[in-house]
Image 1 (cartoon, helix red, strand yellow):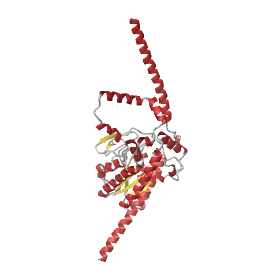
Image 2 (cartoon, helix red, strand yellow; image 1 turned 180 degrees about the vertical axis):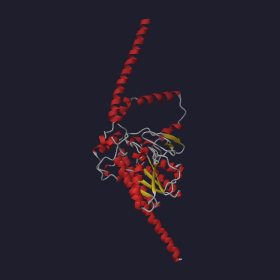
Image 3 (cartoon, one colour; image 1 turned 90 degrees about the vertical axis):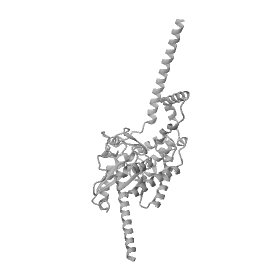
Image 4 (tube, helix red, strand yellow; image 1 turned 45 degrees about the horizontal axis):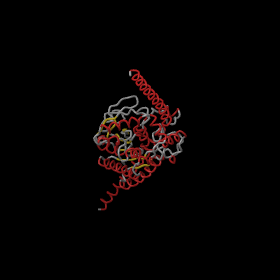
Length: 398
């Protein structure tokens, strides 16, 4: 009896050891496979030298309207935020006299994903080029230009609109700029809800039914099984397509995007601020730029991880352009610009991946935005003078 029990225990131990070794080997295979599948094409050394890398250490704070916002008073080698949660140094709440203040809204491109420091982000470049381009612009002449970076990674345009309405309108910006578009399709695929924040899907468990012991254990086991690297590797060898996620129609995504832009237009009008929107460029649109070899490989990598994604983005952007046209008719004072072709003549590497920018990309985009902003401000100035002259003519006629 004693021998039989020992034999049984040895057999059980052998089975457990064999199972552990098998799982370990499979996990090793899965880890190697995932590394190969997920590994981005290697950027050239000269590009890597100018990048911080994919900075995942963005600190956030909870917000009742926005889900999350950039945490205030952060200081690190890469990022500094002020008391308003802007990626800037200290500023006054009300701008100094003779200052033209610009508030830059957007997602990770505006925030400065891969930028080594605050100084490498889009906002300081836009500040510099606005000062250069605006020397002869009446609204900018002899004024200090100040660009505030209110970007936040993964923000959709509705979060930008609410960020301005609930918080940053108090900064009394003369110009509010939205650099947006890429996060709308991304969030729509992830949440299946047009206009919802990309992180909205994590909140769906809040109203889930009361768990039972059996259901809880089965869900836990299923979750742990799904997290095994070999299971993830086998699943990602045949990645899900966009159609598998059943995202909303691009027209619905564009409608939500257009409403957010209109909300910003209304909010800015109420604060007597000029509003402009820029549809940001993406490497997923090869017809908008002659992609460098690395950019082509990177775009193909992202498409391979979710077949059909590029076409969905393209369809959404086509619908966005239609909303820009509608908004231009309804709000003639709003500046709207399709910046997706800004790198069309540039053979150099402007993208670090499917949408984030190299220093060259940020510089070219900042130049384009500055020039477009100055042109719009001059156009508004001429319109104001024409309106004033018409009013004088009416008064004179009486």
